[in-house]
Figure 1 (cartoon, helix red, strand yellow):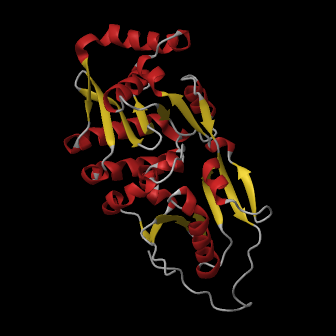
Figure 2 (cartoon, rainbow, N blue to C red):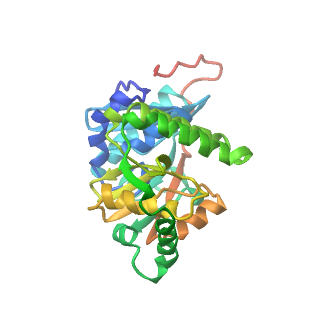
Length: 319
């Protein structure tokens, strides 16, 4: 099969989105916006195979990593083999798959011994009951409601929730500059990559079809969030959530309001992983997840180099 990989761009999103609804997948990677958000950080490239599957590669320097093919569960074994052959024969390297979900791996039905499988504990996604996060009912959410009530008591009619449009981009960028500056030296390259992805989303909101909203306090944007919807699993996915940490109750408020207004029919909420950061882990656990979605790295063990020693390496497909 002649696969033609190219860099993922905003104009591709509308055509690729339907493929992501071909099977159940409870990870945050089950929607295309997650790939788009990190496309520059991970060097995301894609190819459409037979009009039935989307194959994804990340390409940073000389490192290539794949995702599980985006297709129907019953088609996974075939398109996994197609991608493996491309990695082995065209790129001349063993297949390595990142962020593989358990359902997808089960559908592959791979013989034992072909791949080493390692769980990436820090990349597990937190999944919550959507109605619980909309209502914050019950004793376990008592602290969250107290924080929100404290915000409401202090700011009364001085705040407003609304959707963010292209007209608000400059406000979001100014907020991001303030938020990024507040992180100081603690912010690493990963954070910078996230901010770069947010800028790209805001530039192309018209074609991405994503959900973006914010909270204004005294006329100034002080929190904003970005989400997607996985219709197969009726799951909202919260990709981005930023707020002024100096304003008590703002984080739980934007969390709740976003779900109430944009995802009233969602059953589940995926708030992504904690990347191993203790503070982020504590924050995500405080919302009481109902389960974690484990992710795995799969590394091919039976790869045999296709070229004799000293042979000139064929260039991979141009993006």
